[in-house]
Length: 125
Image (cartoon, rainbow, N blue to C red):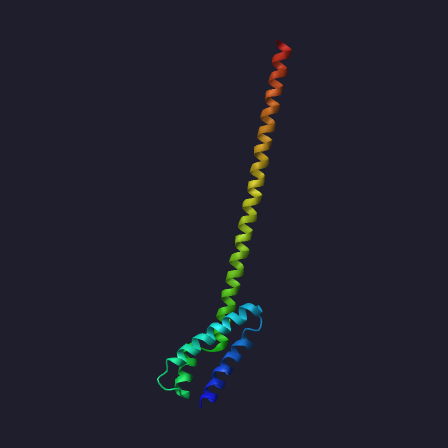
């Protein structure tokens, strides 16, 4: 009976692996390991190792395709957040560069202004 239960769980995890096909391999393996660990813990807690109990666990976990879709959506959200953060930091960098350039320009204009005043002072003195 245990072999049949192991097969049920292995089939479930294989469906999850297939559904996660487009996910980066390290992420895919991490997700499968986490679901597999949860599945093992839930099975260990069963009072009777029978097909009904394992099927209930699998039902509570949800369809592998739904887990994969949620994981893919999470990864896209993380990617978009990272991408957005990079865009924000790039914008901050551009603004900082402009401010720095404006500051240098301001100092250069100030120095030029002082030079003109000195020349004018020397000319009329």
